[in-house]
Image 1: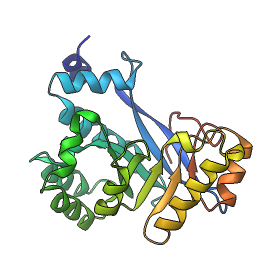
Image 2: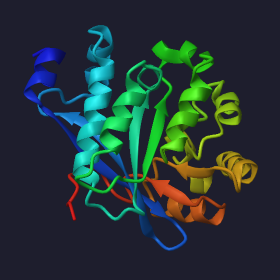
Image 3: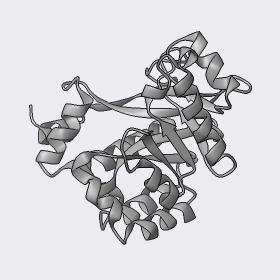
Image 4: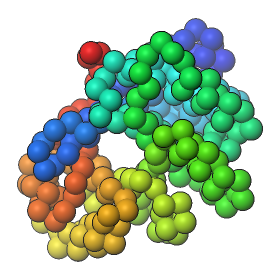
Length: 236
């Protein structure tokens, strides 16, 4: 089955992975992870969409479905949504966002768009339109995160210039954090550097020891299988 059949027959849904605020172990929000009933590999799904020029359609459909499903969650629990740079820069995207934010039927979630650093879209980060688009969406109350921070050589440059509300550290930094002095120093460096302006989120927490160490060195929000696996969201 190709991407057009997936989109037309609505085989898409989300699993939601919790993010925890470590100071009080409260749920901070959820990341909506797009899934398909007939394509088990999400990366393959997005690759097919890129190749068939339907990535914008897939991204906006994901946003719309997540909004509708998440609207009954407490408004202080943020909704983190992955989005491609080409979607943010698409000429129809601002109009699309106004159309769903202005719906009177349900409360609007507190939204954080996680910017995807796809290699195929690397050049788009240099677009002169980018700061304008980000400002327009921030005026709507939307916040931003850079996902997988630390994975690429240009991540720090992007963080400085984009000034995101969140940095989601790549899961590499969480793996064996409790036993790696070098990773502890790097994570501490990130939290100290961005303190006050940007919330640093550590992804990929999979052990109790790594979670404990993350809290000790100043991580405010964490995510990972030890905290909670992606699953269907109980609405309400």
